[in-house]
Figure 1 (cartoon, rainbow, N blue to C red):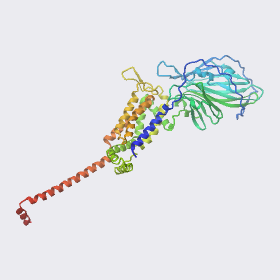
Figure 2 (figure 1 turned 180 degrees about the vertical axis):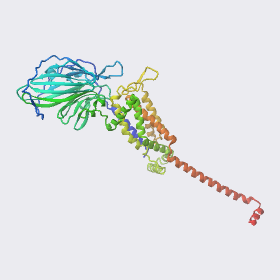
Figure 3 (figure 1 turned 90 degrees about the vertical axis):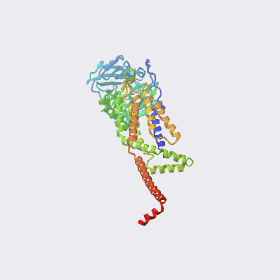
Figure 4 (figure 1 turned 120 degrees about the vertical axis):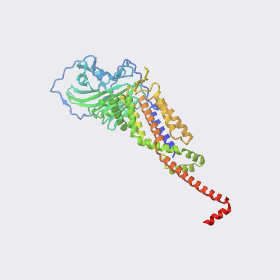
Length: 584
């Protein structure tokens, strides 16, 4: 088998995997212009027959219900070191959630990331529904408390009280200064003297988080089947999940809005309409007269940062997912963050991680380059065989295989080590693409000795395409150092591969390109080392063959000289020769 056929298949497979997101991008993100939200229509579907809740209701006939006074909705501010949230007192609907540590761009004057926009307010994010009726529009609400300002280490609570029909809803939200989690306790009270049933719903809604086609917003949830992601095209007809739900939310690579429910028997409904992602977690409840039930749950709104997700219940940390090779990408990102703790630059950390990976795979790469160099030595002989048997392909293959056997060369020796490394390369690619740590992380923020912004954001493309062009040049140099394909068609395809990779990588985040460029440079250095200092068995065989040939040539020369002397002796005088014989 020709090694270049396998190498070509490997490289093309990598190109296909890397280009997948470019060939099948998600739909363009909606316009994030600020519009006045429309009030939702009062559409009340027929109430579904509820099922009994296993939790026993609590009788409240022996205690007096607190007085309730409805007030007009007003904005309530919760300010912490990590975020600034704005709630509406009419139902506790979330109007804004501004992340203080994250901006929309690297521009110093760029606004902070807001996970809620006016376009999603009509859906009532973090609102409560009862029998599909939005409580923030049809209910009456009051608020206990005022604006909250939390210092590091502090914990404070807001209390929203509301009525919708005969049901009273009390929401207590607890905020901690040093986390993005919001704890909530909901108490539902049947204020009537008759039994009551209904469906309690929790709403989350948001438009696209970003405008990056490599970073699509989607609905994510974790249930008995593990982690699932649903993009816009999967949500056109809506989805519904019933059992084993541990959490659900709206996510992208960097941020998420999620709800961890009180119990796994809640139902998830998710859809996408009017350019808004919306999910609702519902629970059927049954109440005796003057009875109440309580639910405890919490929200997480913020970055997909492992430092903040550690210790979260219900496998919320599983939301950090890097794709097919997640099991490899997770430890690679752990090592990357480890290096960052010491160098404080993610670009340098990527270079160190690339070096570590190269050292780990050095024996396999060494074997690969060794096999490729052996193949390079055999290229002239293989070319002669192809020319000699160009009309008899079977004979040509037999002669080539005999050549491999004679010189003890494995045609697949250069491919198998590469195949082993491919999953690691793809895992690192997915990890770098989906890590919030690299978002707006600089490497070389300005071109040296200038004020021109360059690699100031490792999650964005190189603005001047310098690194993709350098990467293509290093790929071309690698090809020049490798043995040339015997098939002219393969040779032409291999020559175009650097251009293909430049086209693919030219819009990729610069952090990915830096990794690939550094890997190419280290590979070139290793290959150059092999060409200069490797003690190849093929070279030893050639030296032995040359020495043997020289010895045979020397013996032949000695024999010819003695023959010549014998032939020259008869030319002497006859008597002298006879006298010599007589003396003997």
